[in-house]
Amino acid sequence: MSDPLLGVPPALLHAVEHRLPEVSGRPLLVGVTGAPGAGKSHLAAELAAALEARGVRTALVPMDGFHLANPVLERLGLRDRKGAPETFDVDGFARLLRLLRDPLSRPVYAPDFDRSIDTAVAGALEVAPGTQVVVTEGNYLLLDHGGWEAIRPLLDLAAYLDAPDEVRRRRLVERHVAGGRSVEAARAWAEQVDGANARLVDRTRARADLVIAPPTPAS
Image 1 (cartoon, one colour):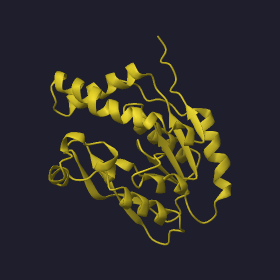
Image 2 (image 1 turned 30 degrees about the vertical axis):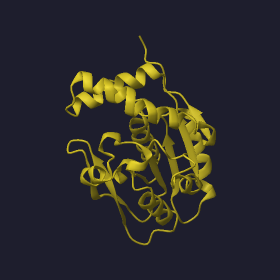
Image 3 (image 1 turned 90 degrees about the vertical axis):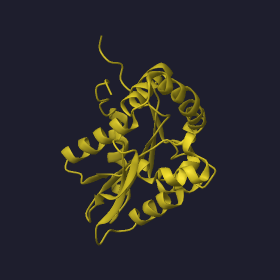
Image 4 (image 1 turned 45 degrees about the horizontal axis):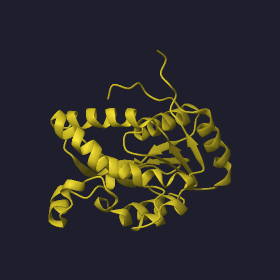
């Protein structure tokens, strides 16, 4: 990706710090959502780093670790829709969040998604006892059907990251080209598959605690 890191909007950092005293003995669960290409991964990583810099023990557990494996998607006839809500193990994701809402007496291990091999890797992420904040990010955290309705009640704080469509589409094309697609195929996927998912996600923003926009880069 050619974009610089987003920086953490003060409103988001303040909201997390304000909510932190409301939980006791367990991590605060913070969700960052938005349409494909909005910059969720960058923002979630920067939020986790900013909290750590303030002495808040933080773990980052993205939703993308719950992508169904490609052979499963092929068997289900969903390979050409990878990234749509039905191509994730939403029940597994919900079980992990429920587990993280309890006090942690031992480490909890979660999957992560490795773009270099286009698949999830089990047990790649650790949430250690004493973790105060868990940041998760993904497109469908606020979706209200298809099993995803279980996710929003498990989040203590949800932020929707807005971004201009032209910026998102450019990022998506760059991402798909980096993943091995031709420019033409990358553009088609960004318009057809990512575009449909973006319209779906856009309708969920009202369920967020706050809507934030990335800063405009200096010219």
